[in-house]
Image 1 (cartoon, chains in turn blue, cyan):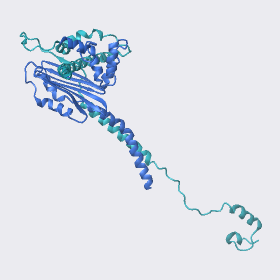
Image 2 (cartoon, one colour; image 1 turned 45 degrees about the vertical axis):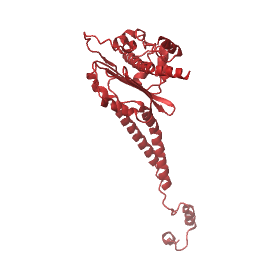
Image 3 (tube, helix red, strand yellow; image 1 turned 90 degrees about the horizontal axis):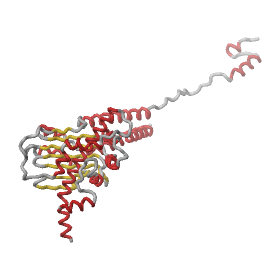
Image 4 (cartoon, one colour; image 1 turned 90 degrees about the vertical axis):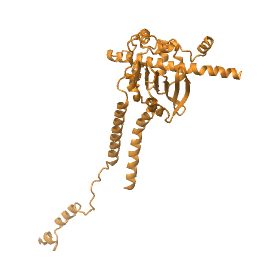
Length: 195
Length: 167
């Protein structure tokens, strides 16, 4: 009877683990999603607001309307193929001081969490502070976050999923995305020449 | 003939009766220990069913919590105020790329390539939703690349300076 009880417990635990593993792993993948609801109230003060929320379902739906015959669209489709979501909140203000550091603190707190690494932090008087964060799941990039805080602007970008930053940089100049001069060595040379 | 044998097995038995006794004796009651049919053990099956139910419930609750946490609107919102007559000071020019990339009107203007008919046969409503999602996605990618460009332009001079130092 005791053995039978042990076998039953083992069977039950195995079944529970088998079922819960995909659920738990899916939950772990969602960790790179940043909650930005603390910024919602700024929309009332902003002169221009960009609010993009694309979850996995919309991402899959959008990738169905990319034209495979078009090389540019094919590239974008490849880039977004494995992404789980893209979220952007951007506010532009007429005057300075429309948002406080406390508004951004919940986002910074999340970005200080495990897995996130601040890759770049640029501070300038003209452009404010620009920070680029990457979330690493082992050696694989599991998410990207960009935080731009200026006197009159606040932008948070959050890409959920395995994002290829090099590929993203290569998107410049395609599909209405301006050629910004990062990514290809040719563009870099051109930009340097211009300087 | 004495019938006592039939009553209490006394007296002389009849050979025919004896023969009958021998034949029917094989069917005589023989005491055996009581053996009840063994009940089938349904416990493992019940345990698995219960754990499956529990897991499905947990998954359902998790999905519900997740969907509740997600922002409800699934479309881009771009708000621009009515243009004001006064111009901004000339002293602080911004890179021309920035506003062009974020400004909603160029977004709409540059959509001519993206509004091609979808290659796959989607229902009209789903296709509209897909095209809208694609627009948002492109807007998000534009904002992202714009910010990455800013990072690049800010970090590149330092790299060049460092290269010169090394050289």
